[in-house]
Each structure stands twice: as C-alpha cells, then as structure tokens.
Image 1 (cartoon, rainbow, N blue to C red):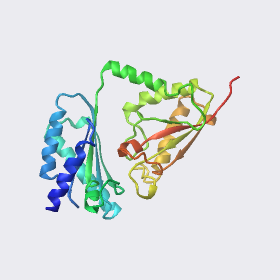
Image 2: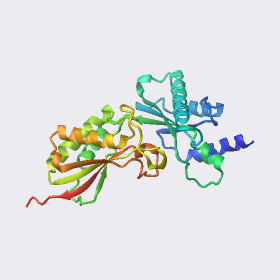
Image 3: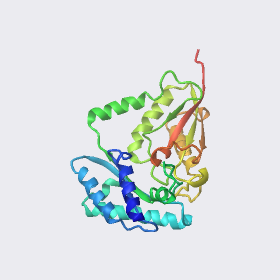
Image 4: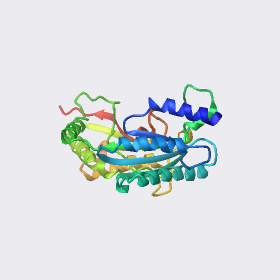
Length: 276
C-alpha cells in the first residue's frame, strides 16, 4: 500500500513540474529496472515526440542519499543506461542521445512533505531532457539576442549567465552546438574592450557544496576546469589575458531549479574603464 501511495504521489506531483521537453522516470530503492507504471509513462512520452524534430536527448541518472558514493554512482549510471535501452527499443536513433550519465546521489529535495520516503523517492530518478530543433527565424533571433548579451547599461558587479553554453556532463569542454555561441561571445568581448571580468564556473548535484569530479583528469575541480576552458578559449580568440580572471565556485550557489541550470558559467563584471 505504501508503494502504491508513493507512486500515485509521484504521478500527481510531476505533471505540473514537467516542461514540454522534460520527462522524469522514478525507480524503486536500490533498483535500476524500470517499473511497469514508469514504462507505460515512457510510452506516452515517446509517442509525444514522434512529430517533433529532435536536436538531442540527454539522460541523467540520480539516487537518493542512502548508500556509498561509489555504489550510488554505479546505480545511477545503470538507471541512465536502462532508459537509453528503452529509447533504442522504441527505435529512437542513438545518434540523437548526446549524454547518458549517472550523477550519483543528490541532496534531499525540499518539498512540502515531511515524509522522508516520499522525499527520497523523488530523488531515485532519471531525468530525460529533449532539445527540439528550432526554425530558421528562431535561430536568427536567438543569435541576435546572444550578440546583445553585453548590453550598454552594464555595471560593476553585474553577472551574465551564459545559458546557451552547455558542457558535456562530467567534463570541462562544451558540446559542439555551443561553439557558435562562444564565437559570438568572444567577438562581443573583443569589441567591448573596456570591460574587465571574472569567469565563474559552477557545477550541480554534489553534497556539501563540493566541486564535482572532472572525468578527464579524475580531479575534483570541475567548476574551475570549466571556467579555465572558457578563459583559454577567449585568450585564443584574442581577448587580452589582463582583462580576465577565472574561478571555480563548486556547488556553492545552486539556482534551486532543474539541476542542469547549475552546470553553468557566469561572467561577473569587475571593472569598466573610462575610454574618455
């Protein structure tokens, strides 16, 4: 009865939380087999995508706070792999799936419930993020908006969040779709040579505000590595080193939204010179 009540709670409370390009699959404790009720929800979700052009699909596995870090990391990866197999069984092109990553345990989610089983149940999950292809007019408008990110009324202390610069999960380099955004950002920063700034790297989903592990190096400094990646890219494109610094802020400043938004880089304006 408790299990049925939990599943009903999850179904009711995820309807309003999901966006049109996100789906969440929930798992039983210690399991990575997809429950039958979740398989049925997956069928409906995949059917809803059949008439939509998909840019990419990202799959992220999570666990609750119980178990060791290594156990939870392996379990979350197995959960992500299970969802990928379901997509493949539905005939979804594997090339559309850009990420299949286990993120391990997440902090206990703060919701309007005192039931620890329900709270933990919301963290035993896989998040599926589907990015749709946009029409050409939308692409043009998006590029124009990105060009305007260095607005004229910037002041010292302002932060610019680089929403469209997406990193490969667990790594310090960006996905290929973000390269054009980086190029435009570099061009804008070269033009606005009166701006001095700090590049701030952030990560998501770690306990006690720790940094995440860089899968390439095995070091727990992913937020710093991502900030340095942006710094090095801008130097290569001609932005003067003397105008920039970079820091890693670990998981100290989560936004309180979908975890993907915490895997971010921000630019903080430190000074603006007077050209006059």
